[in-house]
Length: 383
Image (tube, rainbow, N blue to C red; front, top):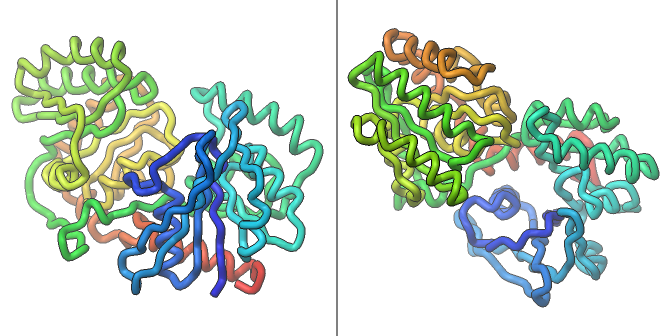
């Protein structure tokens, strides 16, 4: 049985049993696909420990999560003493090309295939990350390159980004959804039916913050509610206290008007119902590595109107199963939403096309299948 070790190189401590930890979801899917897959997570100053997580859908197979003592420098995680663990695996997967620990593996590994799974990409909004990459490229990539390293990315935008760095073997893989917390007791998604109605019930799920253009959401709703008497928006998400309080103050007028409902937190089971009852997800984010809420909405056959970002560019076919708006003025968004509200046929075509999509693109099992297919093409270590 082939063995893959996923190393999350970021210096942040995560609960391995938390919701949709990507490394854990990916590992579970690879185990369901017949491999042995374990994960290394950063454990800060805490001592090393190993946790086992049972993989549903298997005969009690588990993934090992190595919670490793380490230290972080400028958002780079370092894990002393991993050598003895690494030697037992056929392939090492590291995250982000610009992590120093990742670079050490993919640039210097001998007799051990290393693959990169990368998310961020260049965007004018992401100035801090752009600067970090400039430093990394001029300090580390200048010393040692590994242009033929097999790379997988979370979006199409990230493919172009890595190729601009000199990496040649790059494939857009996407991100998967761990649907266990969304599914019913039998583990089956109930699916959706096309129903004939106008696009009235709008939804936003995510942080209330400048990057997500949270004030633009209110401006869009304000203009729509002046134009229509049947529009309503539900906003679900929290944010930093000062910004959130200011946003809520501005939102009070729309809440009093009866066109806005704000909820700070909601469970995954509750969110499933919300996704199914909404007509359109509105997501005007400046920058997203992927955008998990886009993924969630589309999994539940909820059309999305989104800014152009990593997730929307990868998941949405503009005008076919969703809408991409490349501007951040309220009028442009109101125009697109109004067309869906007024043209029932146009809205139902979006919904029908979304329902007919191959839903495996939304899940880690689907991601794992495409990942393994690419590894077999490369014939890495006998795959």
